[in-house]
Length: 233
Image (cartoon, rainbow, N blue to C red; front, top):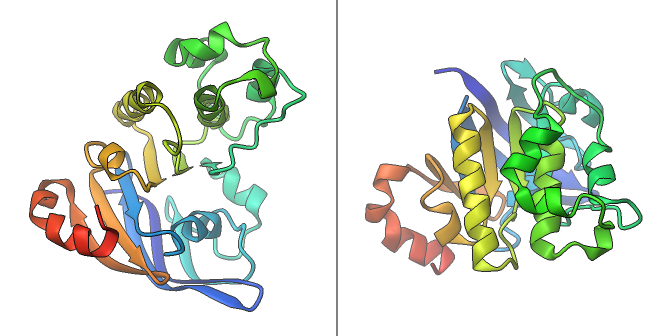
C-alpha cells in the first residue's frame, strides 16, 4: 500500500489558540477518506494545516513520502495537492472560464478544459458567465474543476455539498466516484453524512481537535450507534 498522505502527532495553532492535538491518520493512494465531526471539531483546520495555512504547526505531514511540515504553502501545492475551501473563492469579476484558467499548472497530467467540460456540462454552458451569475452549485463545480486542471492528484475538499440542491449533490457524488476510478486521492470534510457515506473507503471522526474514532466502509452499519452519539446522525 502506497501512502499518499501520512499525518503523525500533528498539532496546529491559530495565534494562541491550540486547535489540533496529536492528530494521526493516513490515506492510501487512490483512496477516498472522510473526516467527520461536529462544527469546531478541527476538520477544516486539519485540511488547512496540510496546506500550511494555519499558524504554527508541529508533528509530521508526509505527502507521497516527503515531509512537508516546514514547507511553505506554494511548495506543498507543487507536490500535487489541491485544496477546495468551503468559501469557494470564485472571482466575481471574471468569467467562469477565466476562473477555471486562473491557477497555474502544478504538475503534468491535469485535466484539459475539454475533459472538465465533459465532466461538468453546466460549466461548458456557462463558460462566459461572470462568477457572480453562477448558481451556488455551479460555483462549487467550478471550485473543484479549477484544481483538477492544475494536475493535483491529492484533493482536499471542504464541505463541497453544503447548501446545494439534491440534484447538484448527486452530480458531485458522481464526480467523486469518477475521480476515484481515475486514481485520485481524496480527503473530504463533510457534515452531510448521507452524501459522504457511500463515497468513502474509510472514515475518521474528530472531536476537540483529535481523532476519536476510525473505521472502514464495511464497518459502517455496525458503527451507526457510535456515530449517532458523536455526530447526531
